[in-house]
Length: 413
Image (cartoon, rainbow, N blue to C red):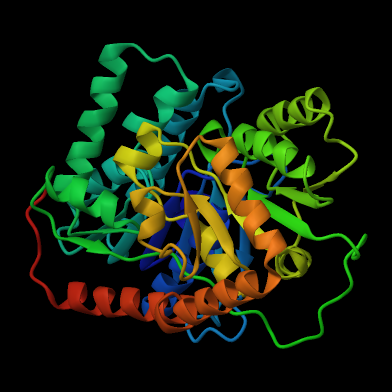
């Protein structure tokens, strides 16, 4: 790894996440970071450590035809993994924060604009601004650790209180907060006086190219793609699919981001429900291969559960926008975060969450009425064209950077 003193950067994007990976967070990071670095360069992307990736590299972030593609090389730094941290997420997060603090101390006067996705980066940046008051900070809130971590970990009340305090310091200390969900924005506005801007996720329209024939093309197909965390509702999806199979011959493409513990649970469900012969399981598909499968499907499924993460924190599911961009009808849970993107019977069908029988009924409806499915898909694609293309989202973010650069300095938090 290069020595800290050899880095020089004016903009910084921080994400306690492994990157790049075939999942929604990586897509979001790529577009947000590229927009930042196009606005202010040279830039640095500071990421969670990954034993499969170099600790330092230079890369040009490519966005295809997007005008916010970075033409100059960006420094990518991954924090050094501490063997004593093992699989302890909190220990890794604190190592990440401490190493970022050390990196910032080596670049005391160069940084002018930083965007961070979590308090693990936000607190070191706020500390750094005490000696660098001209630094502008954007807190990009996609998730709140105080809500998401307890889903996976059993944390003492004192630890949760400290995490919440770090979150609050970041919310109050940032110059601007951006978030991809109106539900999240409304909640954050109750917690802080810092300006909160709704900036949804986006999608790219697929290139005009002939659609390749899918395997078993004689059978209609449904698709789910994305991660396999509990809040995604995959068990409900498989129960619904089993009901659909009782009435129709159909296949399901299950395209998961990673082959991990949650994926192993999905495999166990497939076996116990005797669905292995009618479900095609894929891991880590590249964007072109995934797009082909989305376009070949009669409907794309997003059966989110009504948990705290989806109902209180909020989210903006990329799988929904990317399906709409491909012209594929969406069948999703009727939750506020979904209604921000999809209107029932206009861009897709919304069903009561955690109700496999209702999800199955909607699947059967679109499988039995291909003309309706096509119409919903085309209207969804038009909605993305008008409101949710990444080029439009990146332009809004660039405008926010420009406004922020013209604003007066904020007192240190």
